[in-house]
Figure 1 (cartoon, helix red, strand yellow):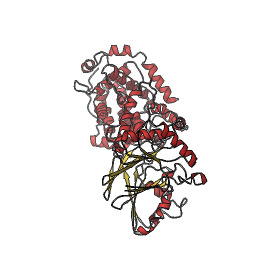
Figure 2: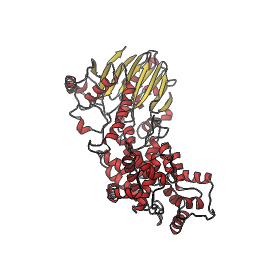
Figure 3: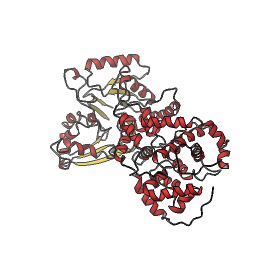
Figure 4: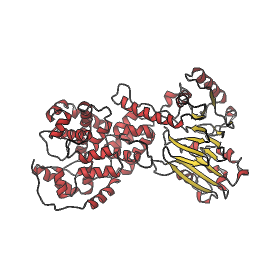
Length: 293
Length: 293
């Protein structure tokens, strides 16, 4: 991979970006397939809570908004709510269902998409990352409750969606240049936009009062070292696995190997993980058909 | 402390020859603390007969705690006569609604729209104070402390604990013990069970050691499977809750609207004969029943 040394031409101040990102938060649309599936499912008062959880947690926008609300000052719960199941236990099935419907109804506006990173492909990558992050946490790090790893994987690239809504043309150009020059996406984002998708995603997650562990993971998974959290390591590795396996698109270049710190923490290399993940495309398409109904 | 049941019926008022002994009004409990404060738990239709006994106490300050916003718990509110009389004060407490994102004031404002009621909220002569509560928030009313506990129902529902000079009671509002949405063979089963156990423990802690527990016992154990997820408890679940919380006395309330007095007594007798818990003071709540201690 090359290092990009082009001068910063379109730098935007942190403060300006923060304001624009914050303004974007409420207008982010959920994925249409999950909205349609949700509307169809919830026509039945007795719809299965299990199916509902599955559809909601495959939609990053809906998931983030529900977690944002449950963790907000209005509820001031004594502990962080980090998963949709957790939200369900506190708020109950009907409230979570209606929250999801209201988010879907209010926000089902046409959203921008770019050919360099189509939403559908981006969702596939996010789901793949979520699935692998959960598996790595369970199998390699022996973590018992891995539901927040799924969400971390699902939301790790959320900042890219914000860029697409906010600066579709500039971001298309950043993606194209990353591909042409085979260099780091984060570096290109910083040069041309002034901020990385990881930082934007973390800012968004922070302003939505999501748990600190999730915010830190979104911010740091692009720059792991020996001190990184298990969650950041799992998500970074999972995203690389999904990229190498060409599961969807995430706009990043393909890596040959995990960085040393990831390899050491997980106790295995990229090749070994990929061998174990041969069922990944099937699992992801299973989740996707669940979302589509 | 004086507790008087003014409405013990669930869902819809059920007057008639078959409900004379237990009463047909919907939920309302009148509580007088030892230092003379009036606390009213819910404003179902039972609040109307209560309000007719208050004329000689004007000007008064009534504190109405709403468990949740379903009809049978708010139906009587526009008919609470002290609202119309100058120099009275009425404080209304309850939950913030995450779906409409409105506070407790929305209930009365919506009920008093011109199409539904001849008098508008701004035409009420008393001073009304609204307090949207958060889970675990405590309110001081004279010598009494009223604490909100988040329960489980298809809308946000607070149970209320009243402590006053060493005496205490807890009213659940409508409540169904949380249950696992997964099957034992599902991967998520044990993770979800851990969340539920924590949640149920929090609820039990909220009512721990009270002198009197007033609990939603809408169904029999046999009826429950077809009503699962509707947000109500059973005779059995309430006895279990009372046992776990170490309460002294339990009153079953929220009687089914179609249940005649005879049928209610028959199922109560049956539940007592099958009970696994050794709780000496258990009874059915009935309209007009007064307990002073």
